[in-house]
Amino acid sequence: MNFSVTGQPRVSSATGFDPRQGIMIGGGALGSLLIVVGLYLFIRDRRIKRVEKDEAEFESTDEVMDTILALDDLHRAGKISDQAYHKRREELKDIIKGMN
Image (cartoon, rainbow, N blue to C red; front, side, top):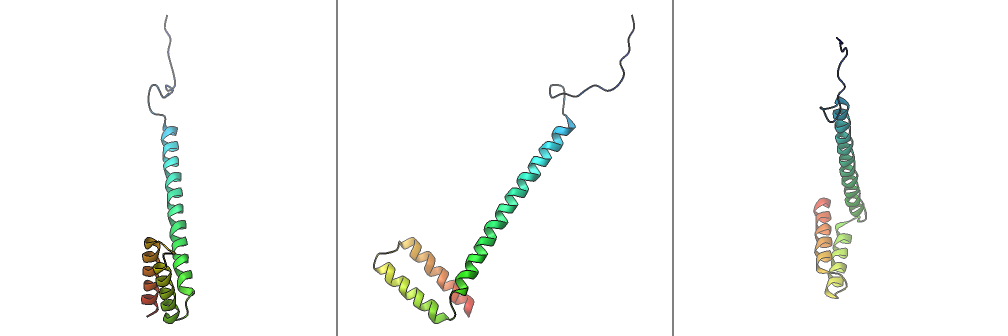
């Protein structure tokens, strides 16, 4: 009794690597990368707009100085935390540097 087999063997996960699996893994990695890049660009854009908004609030360095003085008064009165005070004061100083 003789018999012959023709064609190519089917690849299964138990016997080897399915080429479609590589495409799916690559597509998933690319999709994840695009999501991460999109989130990074979104957050960066929000930060840039916030800085531009802060700078647009003031028309002169005198206004910024008045804001710093008011901030100092709030800090002395204990109405804002040390961390918030120092952070906002540095932001205001940077705005003055950018105006010059």
